[in-house]
Length: 258
Image 1: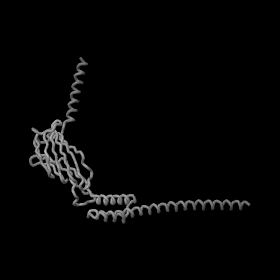
Image 2 (image 1 turned 135 degrees about the horizontal axis):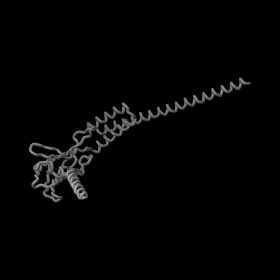
Image 3 (image 1 turned 30 degrees about the vertical axis):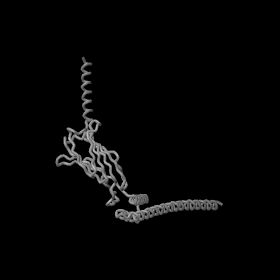
Image 4 (image 1 turned 45 degrees about the horizontal axis):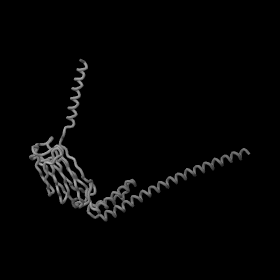
């Protein structure tokens, strides 16, 4: 009888654990992305895919999917799937789109593929670096709009990237040197030139700043070496002087004994 009661309690406990585990892994509205770059060159092609899982879980039964981008020559492909099978597919060619979704005739997954070209740069900034919007995705229900994804990416030209790298190198040299006022002023001027689109001047100024920082570091190292050598000479002189003094004292003692 005790064994039966124990078995019943064990079975009940296992059921509770199973229910809790099921509850803990319940599906929920989520979005993931593939192909989002960290930076792109102007005119470079970008291809990104967003996947919305369980679009009607913790969400209205009817809502509008809205997307926007700053990419050029845009193509959006919105595919609705149910259990992995395609339900519908729509294509849009503008920088923004809207598509109505509802629980009765839409699936359990929405896939959004975006292809476009990196836009030109209208305003250069060093810190933070200039960027553009790859995509913004929102859920619209009535008068409520909830943005659930927003990706921005740094974009550059060959000239701007070279100037930025030169400024980065100069700043690293200044940091390694422990700071240098003249070099820091040159870097500030280089950044101003960068943000005005004068990349050649920015690169030249950054190169000068890096050289000054390196020279300052070498000078500091030379001074440190001279101090060490000077300290060593002082110690050596003290040792020699002490030895000579001891020798003369010993000589005087021996002479006195005679």
